[in-house]
Length: 357
Image 1 (cartoon, rainbow, N blue to C red):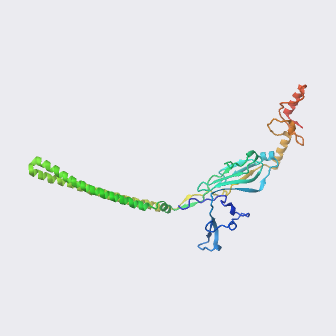
Image 2: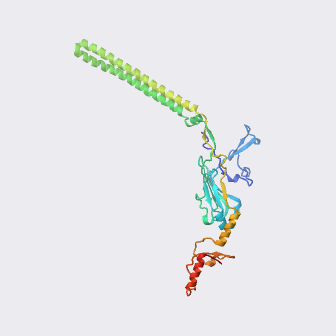
Image 3: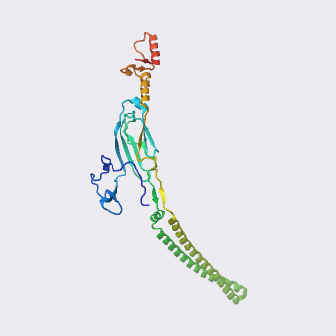
């Protein structure tokens, strides 16, 4: 009930404390104990010699940085590498991927990381240094957005959480009972007044009826009988009304006790499970797929002796290499041979079938 969420995330939100050796360095940044970080000691000792861990307090939840590659991906044979190599970024749980062509990007020098850490749904975005056919990094959502679960298992104490969320529940219940008692006291007094008034009314009605039937003595008898009957009915109403009111209060108190008992009886349970299984990773993964050297050489020979499609309008001389070059296409114009149409036709047929120059 105090900690919202515990996550294991791939990137430190305070990149400045990471040294060149991959260690956390608090001294060089002149961090202040208790203000910027706290130490976790072994047992109850507060001696610095017993420190087993450090808890750092980030000042920002959103941050960006670059990861430079120790071995950048260089493009030496654009066509071969474009056709034979494939790169794919995967989130740690492999729930999201981003495929890209390094040859069309002009290689890979670094990866840009954008993070916004928050409970339950952190945002982690990774993209290579976009270039050439991929344009540039426009700080948009292109790239890998890591999705899935990053939370660690956490125990919930239902009774403690209930107490925290309902600090004023007892006071609220006491006030509710007090309100019911006041209302019932007023209702009871009103019932007594109504009963007395009903007795007087009943006596008057009985006296009038008795007088009509038996004169003065009949009026007296009617008054006594009418008043007695009304009084008995009024006393019974007040008695049962009071009993019902007391039962309402007793019911509310019992329900309150039962609800608390149900909460207290709830065992501690796992409120969240983890996504970190034996197969999941802790960091995003860069996958690289390629073919064998023999297959790459087969593609080189295919291009050398059978060419490749460029699908543009140009002149033959723009594609002549320093060695024998395979040329194939459809001629749409030839200059200076208008007097020999047959020669033009034969050249067109040969180029359409393919020739070596």
